[in-house]
Amino acid sequence: MLEYQMHEYDVLVIGAGGAGLRAAIEASARGASVGVITKSLLGKAHTVMAEGGIAAALSNVDERDNWKVHFADTMRGGQYLNNWRMAELHAKEAPDRVRELEAWGALFDRTKDGRILQRNFGGHRYPRLAHVGDRTGLEMIRTLQDHGIHLGMEVHMETTALRLLKQDGVVIGAFGYDRERGRFLLFRAGAVVLATGGIGRAYKITSNSWEYTGDGHSLAYHAGASLIDMEFVQFHPTGMIWPPSVCGILVTEGVRGEGGVLKNKEGVRFMFGDIPENYRSQTADNEEEGWRYTQGDRNARRPPELLTRDHVARCIMREVREGRGSPHGGVYLDIAWIKSRIPKGAEHIKRKLPSMYHQFKQLADIDITEEPMEVGPTTHYVMGGVYVDAETQMSDVPGLFAAGECAAGLHGANRLGGNSLSDLLVFGKRAGEHAACFAKENRTPAHHGLDSDQIKAMAEHAVAPFERSGENPYRVQADLQELMQRLVGIVRRQEEMQAALEGIAELKKRANAVAVTGNREYNTGWHTALDLQQILTVSEIITRSAIARKESRGAHFREDFPSKNDGEWSCNIAVRQSASGEMTIERRPLPEMPDELKQVIEQMK
Image (cartoon, rainbow, N blue to C red; front, side):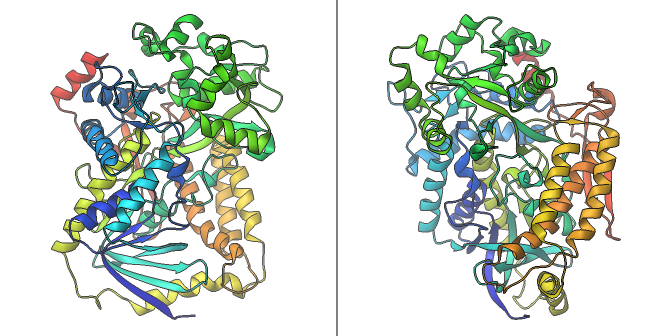
């Protein structure tokens, strides 16, 4: 039981999605030895499901776009809780990261004169998303993994990290196991980069893949790092809700960017009835103008279906609550209607949205060129995560870096579509660069920091479910997902979230008593039992953060506090584990924005 394999690297990257691969590439390019842990197989990261595109102010479709407009859009979308420096770096560096990806072999869709084509997306003032049909994430992963492998990174597939190792307050590696054979693995590293993605599997209805159990968030928390903004969970407005074979699967925002419209059961485009005042000057108030915008008319305003995701999701839920929803508790998303506007409209839809067409035709026998899709909000993304330095991506625990969805700061209270993929590239690069520098500057002997008693305790805790007779871990997982969906979802109330906390405490007791049978070789029940420890931690952090923020802002909507309160709540909610093991909550003031960036935001308004 106590046997383990030892691996040593300058930089250990946990996660092989866009952020992890970009970090590994950068660290390798700077001469560091790099090991990459991936919970699944290389190439199967959830990044491949990102469909719409990469947000970057390339100005290929509309020359009025630039980094200042992108910065202002990101800050406004995040309700000004964003880390302004991260938003600035992101807007300035995203174009170079996209061109770099192109130089490495990514095949983007093209304008007539051969430049990278860009499409409209929710919350973005101009067409900004560089894309490959609706398979952008797949092309990104293909390109990054091919480039990374040739730089010499070592990949440990089907491997899960269970705990981070520390010595004298510095992270020096990780303890995990091989999912195929159940062998324990010890990774010694000069720096660790967390790039594990999100927390969607805490909820019953989610677009996220099975790996998204909040591993990076939990690993950082138990290592003593701060997490911020965890109350901000984004529910993508358009996930399939019927038929059951596709429940939760994302319908990319690109469908609306190409002209798809939202209708209630009465056939009414309900989004025209609820346009926020701060977006009114940019949003079309009639169908004709909205249609012209999707077709590239620069003088037209965008349709209301392309407002920010939090707003669209709440409008859909309003229609459902007031009895105007579809038969299965959603609304209709119709792209087929454009056949009346475009010659050979069906072929146009298939060309622009090939994955959407084939996916739903094969999995649900729905032809999106002929009939509307039945959609509703699905848990999609968490804006919160590990608190990191904007320049280096290092957490407040030395030696621990984070990038991508498991890091916080860029998106504030709500993420704009497409900003996630450029986030991966910009801050994945920065995390890899500075992790390599940290590792080289802080080398310690390999035998240091390997506390045998600590490792023994980790191994014994991991195999404990085999030695018990108790509940099935799948039952606990299902009950947690049901609880979070029902009590800490899109619309939140104090009493319901307090009930959720009590429920989580009870689920923790049950999780500590779950039992599994068989042996350690690819035992999915055992994997689920271990995942429960991470996802329960994250669920509690989300719930406590949501209780603490007594206002509504971005993706966090409190029915008992429906208004935004800038005076009291223009701050980050930070969560950290105390020395005694208690979960502590505190408010952190936002860093002061420089006057020149304040002027940029005012100019863009």
